Length: 192
Figure (spheres, rainbow, N blue to C red):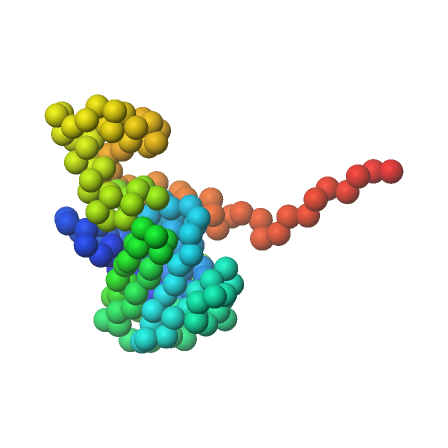
């Protein structure tokens, strides 16, 4: 099991998550785990940069990247303290550092992907990157801010957003749900 620390660049105070994940997962699965950690929906392209080589999925065929599902985390990151990078949504430009903190003994009975720590809520997807995120927080917290702007943000956010909110339990429930989804689904056959 690999223990990773994922930190959002330019967040202040730092927005981060600690993740325990099997070393034999593909980079594609690690991408989905980061999406769960940040409460994002995988609407945009992404890539990993590990030792100067970029990896992504087949949606990014116009990028000069290697196919992420052809490589496991453990093949590419082998030593504690190794740092690599993850970028998501090239318009908003979310960038993260991922550090392999330590390699834990593998327990065949407990192979679950787990969040074990973190700080602060992940920024909402499509809010304009880190600068847009902080602009949104300022508009929401300033009683003198433009009411229309604040109301527009609240409507877009579904009525509320707590930047301090973070729950290991909630993230792990999402991991449980994601990991228990059927691998493939077939449409039901019509009876003749």
